[in-house]
Image (tube, rainbow, N blue to C red; front, side, top):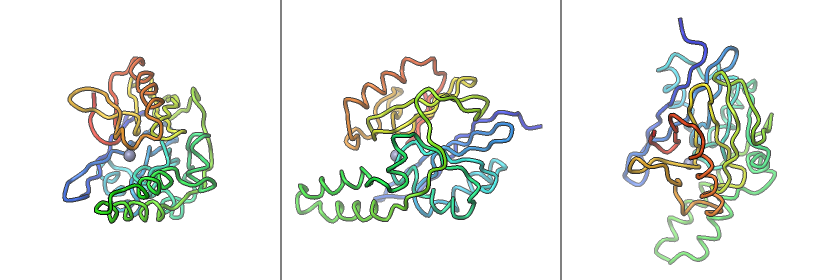
Length: 231
Ligand SMILES: [Zn+2]
């Protein structure tokens, strides 16, 4: 018999700029709920499906998708997933929601356009490609918004931890019964240390540092990071 509450770290691999990268959405199973935390880039549904199948789950069994923040590696496949399975509840933080729905302009796109304008000519093709990628990101309707400290029954009990900095409404999930923390892009493990993920992408680095300190204070047994590493 399967245990009632389960946390599964999925691994999706892909090649980018001649390097293999891995990202890690997380599945949270509990009585009546199967929640996916972040869904990967646009067009990632086939490999997301395959990764879930390997653990005995189907995409259509999902009850909710929690989006930690508006970046395309975290919400890229959300619109396609919602189109296929409209019953899947899309959940994100109250602050991040207007960017996820497209009501406000995606902040990574705004950042990319500003960076492109001041880039040396030689780097501009890469900058333009990045801007085009962010322009292709499809927004998705949000069914439910959550706030800091809100508790959800996912995986037997989880708490929303607002961890702004990478984006203004970035949220992480603290799974108290397991002692796990799903960091999203608030943190990543490097050399056995929990550090800020891609600091140059942080929209507000000082706020991101404060969020990381807040995460380090929690009684966490294991941090599950989207861009790799467990500690
Ligand atoms: Zn990311």
